Image (cartoon, rainbow, N blue to C red; front, side):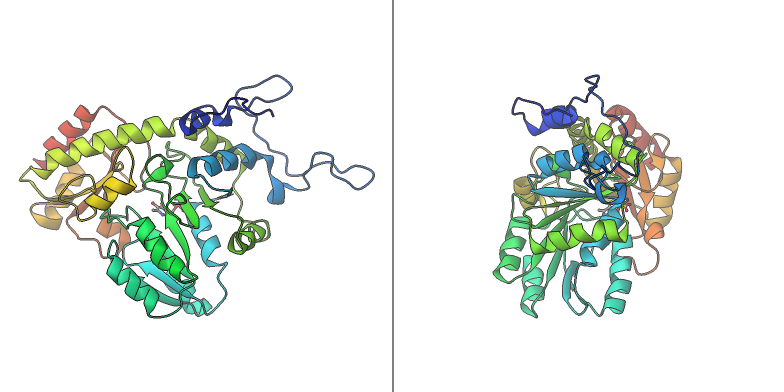
Length: 381
Ligand SMILES: *Cc1c(COP(=O)(O)O)cnc(C)c1O
């Protein structure tokens, strides 16, 4: 493997997958490293520098280097899912510690945190998304070890001011983790705003083609918390397969193009639906009516993301009718792929969800926006 010699923009680094070429043929596309084990020399050393792929898979090198660069961090770790990345952070907490979490966050993680907190005797406290007073109260009421931020937050796209939250958290000894899955490093770089760790479900925009489940953590510095998380990965065995790593690097090549197109289409759809009487409310941080718009305009560069939700006039039953009539938008969970998806979110999240029952979540892909607009128009009836 050889490095690109020219210093490049992040976009060029991503498109060229770090600009690496590969010996002996000078391949521009990296090989898929399948070997689980590596040869040891007679003197006991490892001439290739690797012992076993659970600890040191060469399949991760380029992907982790690219994700470190894209987030402006000092190191990255791949995981076999976004959930595995998230739980790796939480399991690095000692039992009995305090965790401050937003009321609206990725639903499966909320569920897991509640069960984990009970078993691990974690003091789990909640704050209202986007509300710095509520966040400050949460931090002030007891010494807090970890602050969790998700922005924009699923599925209402509430925005939390990362820099302001970090200032509050770092006044104490609180580590700040940002789930930046929806923003992507194209729009927001949380480490530059002072966050300690960034988390992505790489299943979503980073891979972008709905054919890989993966997660990643990126750290600002080589802190004791990071060393603990890094040491645990090969022991817990939560590692990504080489094929998935390869597909993720391939997906990352088009990240900037895909995110820009999704943002442009989502913004156009949001503006048009915001004046449509068949839609009671559009949740999209790019609209001036969204409570997080001013912070999003500062914190997100070049777009407000490809995710929006609509609350259908006529309530839950009409929301189901609209979802059933959509043809270009596919009815499926997940987000951040090239194809547009619609989801009746409350029925996925189940009892106790804070998601309104008349809400449809739209993941806007990169199809012709006219087709997406026409599909929504016919489905709204
Ligand atoms: C999907 C998602 C996750 C979980 O990621 P998986 O790859 O599905 O495990 C976490 N956070 C957010 C915001 C997500 O959208």
